[in-house]
Length: 218
Image (tube, rainbow, N blue to C red; front, side, top):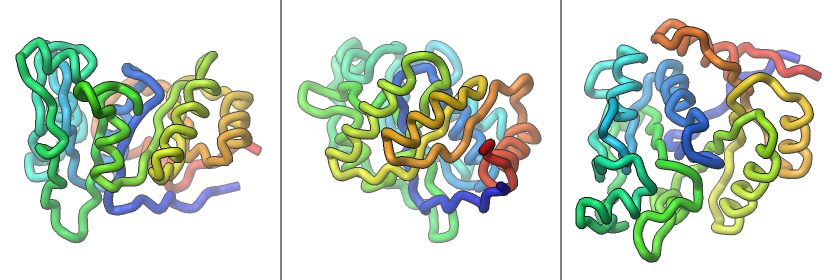
């Protein structure tokens, strides 16, 4: 069954079940396909290329498709810990939705999972709620993903956050996909297998395959 193009809201917050699961790759795919504006409110880790720089390099999109981070923290740690290393405190009042115009999509990417701490009181889920953006949950296809994904979905919903769907990264695993859809009562919008080469053409093709003219196994 050929699926119709996923209807993306004007503002979406990409979060995940953990760190290092491919949220930035998903953001790059959406940027390549939607030609939106990318914003990473908290960059935790500057010892290598930042996520903003990586997406800019691999999509080839110009500077006006990107907004500066609210916090740029050097150590690759949980935001609260990385901020503490710099004698900083992440303040919720510092986050303001950037102006992107009426016709573009705002692609927001979080740091870590939904329950990662920002300060002594607030978690990433509080930032998602503050920004009033539907959540796009990224998970892995490997063992353990059912538990992690269902817990994340439950917590997002418990906080009144709309979850627009799940994207699974990794080799396709029908058992895990079906379990997430059934028990989470949610759609898996795409299953993104590892990309051998990441560049603007491949990212655009992946967007087309996964969100426009891809097929879902029955």
